[in-house]
Every structure is written in C-alpha cells, then in structure tokens.
Length: 344
Image (cartoon, rainbow, N blue to C red; front, side, top):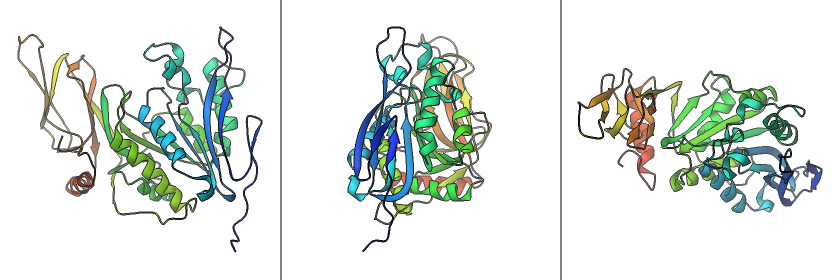
C-alpha cells in the first residue's frame, strides 16, 4: 500500500480542480475596446498523489509554434492516473501575438517586460499580473518554451542558472546537446520567477512560425524525463546524453544587405577567422563580402533566409572551454536524431 500523500484541491481563476482530474480552462483577460471577451487557454493535469507543480508556458511572442505543439502533445500523452503532482500548461501566453499574426500591433510584443504585472496598469501589465497570481505563484518549477525568431533556426538547447547546481543537474534531463547559462540582460519574467524561489528552464529549438518535428519530439521527451526525475512519473529518467555547457553566446550581424550564402550548418565547430558565409549583390554586380568570425565556437543559431538586410543577426556562436570535446558530444547527439542538423 502506497504511503504517498494525496494531492489537495487546486483553484485557478475560481475554478476547483480536484485530485485525479484534468481541466481545460479559459482564463479571462482584460477587455478590449470592442468589449468582446478574450481568454487564455490553460491545460491542467492534477494527479491524485501529491508531488511538484510544474508550470509550462509558450508563446510569449505568439509565434513559437513548436512550444504550442510540445504543450498539447505532452498533455494528450500523459494520463492523469500516472501523474504525481500537477502540470499547469499554457500553450500560448500571448494570445494577441498568435491571433493577429503577422500584424505588429502593440500586444504582439513580448510579454516578458511586463512581469510581475500590475492589476491596475497597462493592458499587458494586467495580463502579466493575472498570470503571476493565478499560475506562477503555484509553481515549483517553470519551463519556458521558445524558438528562434522568424527565419532564425536554433540548435536545441536549454538555458538555466549555472549558480544553481540542482537546476544545472535537472537541465541535463532535457537531453539537449547544449546547456547555456542565462544571459545577464534584464528579463522581468525571469526575475519574477527567481523571486518566487522557483526553478526555471528555457527550452529553445527551431524557428518561429515553423513546425520542427525533431525539436517538438525532443521537447516532449525532455519534459517527461524531468518529471521522471522528480518522481512525477514512475519510470526511471534517462541520462544517456551528456551535454556541453556554454557560458556565452553572441550573434554575428551583417555589415551590408544582399543575398546570404551560408557555408556552415547548425552544430558545426568554427575557428577564429573562418569564412562562414558570403553576402553578394542580388543583381550580380559588385564584389561578394565574406562573413568571418573573430571567435572560436559552435554554430547554435543561424538565419535561414537568403535575403538579408544590413545589421541583421545571421549566426549565433556559442563559446565552450573545450571545443574539441563539445564538438564530439554534439556530433554524437546529432547521430541519434531522426533528422541530422549538422549534415543538412
């Protein structure tokens, strides 16, 4: 007979969710000028047995479609009777960014700057306030699902706080080839979660407004593997992949506009001074310009459109202490994927 404690009732937006129940909620958002209602879909699995509460959210810009698919596939493939603890999932946090794409109305912007929110503030601050009070404050662990931007493909990786050794160990459970330390720039959403003493992981893979089946499958498996380690699922977690750790990543931007021809692929190791692409005049006049790198590293992000403007970020380079070791690990990881990144 199990000695594990029973879960308690969960309340989200005045809705009671009892242990052993699943729920699809529509969280009311602030009114628009048309007075028509707007809701944020919330999907919940509330296990009968007590355990951690994992909050998973995607769509901060509204265009991260991989994250949307990861959330829905995770929920649909996880029976409530197998879960100890609770999963609270938001497929798309920025409803405006999705429903009004590709319009560039104010609400299509990233919501991260608005947290922790203000219930009497701007439209976006009120949304952030509702999410903070109703969702984030219930979390033991938060998982943010991201993609690259439009026409910017990202090698699957996880961001976490390297100062938190427990979080760093948990990050390996996503089984991505690279784990990166959180960048130092200000992020109000990340700061809010940190102040709530909640572990945060950011899974980033693929590009905006595109489905990447390999990235989606890896995301679902990675979250489930973390849940196994947290005893939310009965199976034992897998540690078969040993990731490489990166403390710094920088984008290389173009110095002119034109046609981009890439000479590298995601996951490829480059040396300082390597030519990694060329930009040429679309009309065949003038001399092509080489794009070179001043640093040694591995390509973890790249532009996928041949049409580039001056100043556009085109290659994201991650730095590692031991490049040869990192290259070997990423190549080994790549061989296990159904669709290779390096040999595209």
